[in-house]
Length: 372
Figure 1: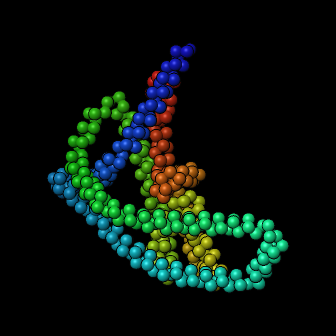
Figure 2: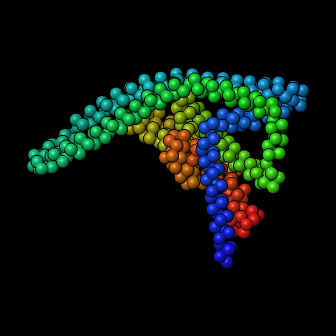
Figure 3: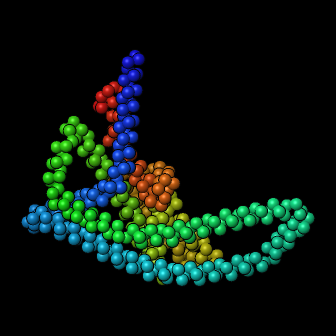
């Protein structure tokens, strides 16, 4: 009995050590190899078109890979250039609009502070100061600390924003070099796709080749299904919102719709996190036509999502909303804004490993010494 327990402990220790070594290897090698991973994904995405050109049009493999690469990146660059140009123009318009709304809010705040209720409150506070001089210093210190904390937070926010811009600008040369490496690597991987596949097959032992293929197929279905479903839902939301805003003649409709579509990634909250306060503000600020219009757009988006979402998710692997929210929060804490994507994607990967029985096989190995 003691020997059985000792063997299980040793196998469990070996699994933990192997997992830690794999995690450390990924952590150390990913910064060095990520351009080639991106290049492999691009080559994988291009492979159907390359194969069609090679079979149907009789292109040589290198010419089919070159044509596909130019077509893919040309389309992406055209779309990104048009989108960025539109976004920059509308952001400038939004900035001017925000300045106008800030002036309106400032005037409303001034009127509010001059109201009888606030003036009576100020008088009561002054009377409290006069009647309780011992509390004056404590209150003033707390107000000073609060002001200092808020000021520090605002300063850090502004400094971080400008530092981010500077870091982005200084990293442009290295980003250009990485982009060239990705292009060249994608071409060579796509050009020699079959040969690279045979080489990897020879490296991987036959005993574990089949489980790896099963894991990859399940992971591909889960991960790409999740990403595809999210992109479809975001696109549908952004499209409905943009059409509604154009009908209401709202300026910067494209940029606003894009931002609302990104917010739609949040489970349950989604579009309502932006559109409900926006509609309420417009209704209270004396613009009922636009406020009702925003509310109608929100209702249309909700109904459309309820009708379309089951069909979209039926062909993909989704996550429980609570699990998605947990993944986004943990990812946000660990990786910043990028963690909003990393968190749910990590959950999808873990779920795919679970469905591929990886964790079950590891348990069987630890308990029985056999994978299956």
